[in-house]
Length: 302
View 1 (cartoon, rainbow, N blue to C red):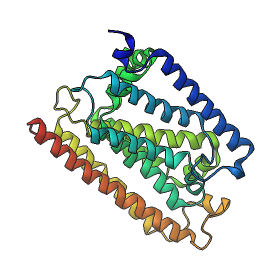
View 2 (view 1 turned 90 degrees about the horizontal axis):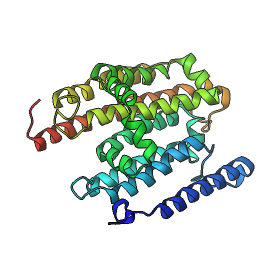
View 3 (view 1 turned 60 degrees about the vertical axis):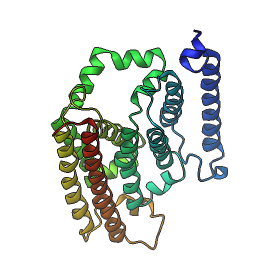
View 4 (view 1 turned 45 degrees about the vertical axis):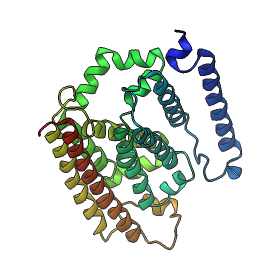
């Protein structure tokens, strides 16, 4: 059996794909850097090489990994759809014109973070696409993920208490008004904020939505359901505090100019507070239902 039949793609084909990814990225970078006014809304507002490579390479490795896995190991069609939907959503809120809106209105910024911290990661976790990405990835990626230090770090971050504290704590931290103001103005800190939202969201929901019984999963189904419910209430409290505030807690948006000038600061905050309040709570409910479904299919108990 030759290498092509094992991997699903020949080394030459993979090289062509990598070159194509690089060329497309260079074109997008040049266009957004030197001709930003001519770039359509579906193209990046602020092109980011790390985000672009993370999305495109993950997609390529996932697709290649599907060809390398056996039919039993390969995620089902609906899981594949969930993977592409999650990846596409993360791209849409970070590398299109929506990014401009997220920097000009508080409620659109909250929509962006809910997509990055909840909806997108939930879709990726439901896809169970990690094995496919690793199977399709290069040897250096597999070596890093298999290294003892990486496994220990991952295990520490997947401890239930640590995972819950990080999930809620980061969401609250970036909404401390002085922190939020600086993060929105500082380009480096802004990227750190967004990356922590995505990475932490993927780590948390991958723990909660693992469809396997324990072991080999890290925690029992009951703990996973408790995590999904437990993180819901602090986010409801945060959303309520912002929704019912009568003062401008986030002056950055007035400082830079709101995109919708007819929406006042308080109204903007109220809408943003509702975005923090309701959609994350809905994702927790969906996660609990998914955990119960996984438990029943596995024939396990709490």
